[in-house]
Amino acid sequence: MNIYVGNLPYNVTEDELQEIFAEYGDVSNVNMITDKYTGQSKGFAFVEMEKQVDAEEAIKALNSSTLKDRQLKVNQARPKTSHRPKRY
Image 1 (tube, rainbow, N blue to C red):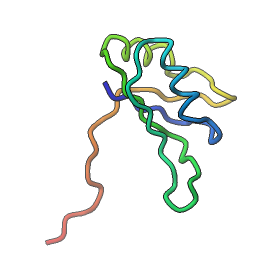
Image 2: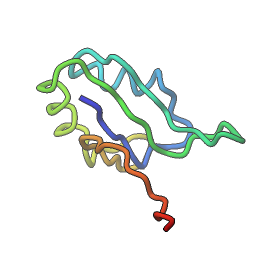
Image 3: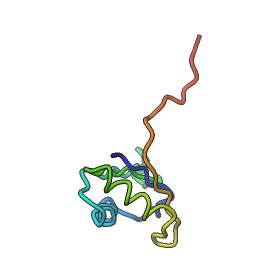
């Protein structure tokens, strides 16, 4: 399951997220979203976990928890949609 993790402190690393989510099960991938020009974190990431039951437990436990004085927003990631208006 793919998990959205928002409101992250800008200095959190992918390794730190890996460790946090690994407490709930096997993590297959962590993708920290960064600005393509500066490389600075945009404050959110996606974490993929092997088992849905582990992912659901992680979401339940970590949503609204605090990491480095920031309250995390953790939920199931939604499929990407296009935000561009259609041209006719």
